[in-house]
Image (cartoon, rainbow, N blue to C red; front, side):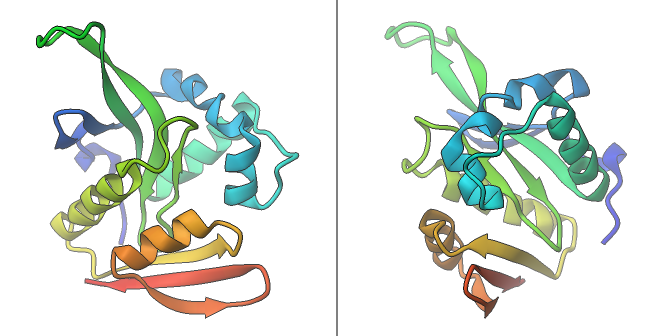
Length: 172
C-alpha cells in the first residue's frame, strides 16, 4: 500500500486521556528521552548501549513517515486534581502504521498500563479504514516479551523465528 501524507489525519482519537498526533519535524526532539533509554534501545534494536541522537531520530522518522503514518502517542496530563479541562497533552512514545512493520515505543513510566494495546487497536483500526489487508511485524527480539504478549493478544500469528527474533502476521 502506498501512503499519502496528505491523507494522514493530524489526530487519531483513542479516548479522553489518549490520542495519536502526527508530529511536525520540530517535534522530533521530544523523542530524544525515549531513544536514550537503555530498555527501549535493547528491545527495539537489540543493543542497550546504543542511543539515538537527533540526527538518528530525524533519519528514522523521515523513513517511517515516508513509508507509513507516523504518530506520537500522547497522554492528557491534568494540571490539578479538580474535575475540569485544565491540563496538557504530553508525548510519551511513537507508533507507525505500515503494512510491513508496526513499530511502537512507549517511554518509561507509561508501560504496562494498557497504552500499547489501546494504541495498537487504534492503529489497526486506521489500517482497516485505509483498506489494508494485512500487517506484518518482521522482527521482535525474543527478550522483548512485552511486545510478544501484545501482538499475540491482538491476534497476530507467529510467522517465523530464529535464535534472536520472531516475526508476526495479522490478516484482516
